[in-house]
Length: 401
Image 1 (cartoon, one colour):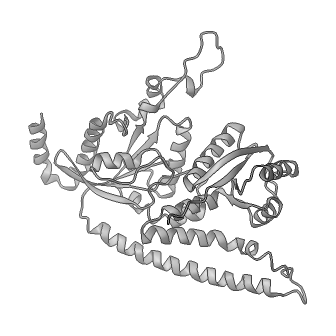
Image 2: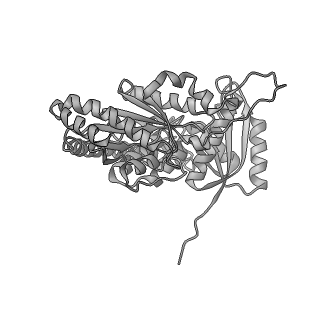
Image 3: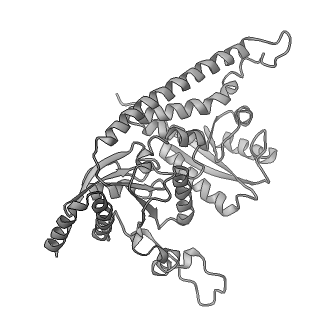
């Protein structure tokens, strides 16, 4: 007997603030909708409110909260997802007001990671991040025990239970950290055993086509689908281009507002990035905010002390790139939406010169050119590492002409 999967009807809530204008707020909510879809929820409506900063008690103002409350009751909504991390007090107050499940962006991402984790390594990392997330929110789990106010005669079972749970959780966090250290040592030995082959790591924002490109280059079958965080575990494959072998790794995708605890937990997964000789930064050029996505990736690479490594920019999905020609009588300033792909190539991208290529992994456009570029970059490092092999490359190059 098959168990029918429960589909949750969700609303999304975001803020428009002086630090996050309307355009950005809409982009973030659209990304949150994609996250909700990945988690298995159906988005029914999106709510926005203009505020200088989030309300410390309920995230949104009282008027907007009443509007949300009415919509929830009238439309059979059972989940509300907020675009920023909520404090324990905000979570408690929102649940009391709306009487439905409340999630924030962090909790949603953690849920997706828990669902996607396959190996012991990924599962341990996700569990560690979840425990760190839960630690300051234990009071919310015990609101039914209301003798928690402190003072003489008020030290009741609620506070005792919270303290007990906190100790259990702290112990769990300590054990998970120890387990990760052990797993990392094992993986470190595995990396050393791979010999001195040149290492190439695919990096980029989530859902830009890294796994699809990995499959093309390595002729393997890594999971690739139109979902966020399809890949959590780093996949490493040996690739041979024109008789030149190298190691290619596919890493977890980055995202805006990625939870700090999750970044910390997954730092070990990104050791492949740290130890790579060459980074291949995949960019979805069809995405309207691809430049901001580039900034997110570059910031994360800086945190990993990997920004100075040799890098190839691969602009993927050129088949999906679209633009709108401005009318002759339209005197407004041209925006990115009005620029053709050829014009875009002549902007800041032209400064990248031979370290930049435009492809479509899905339609296999310019893949051979990318292979040649990888061959040239890997060969440079390989001949420095094994100078006595240089004559072999000259022989193979002559044979292929």
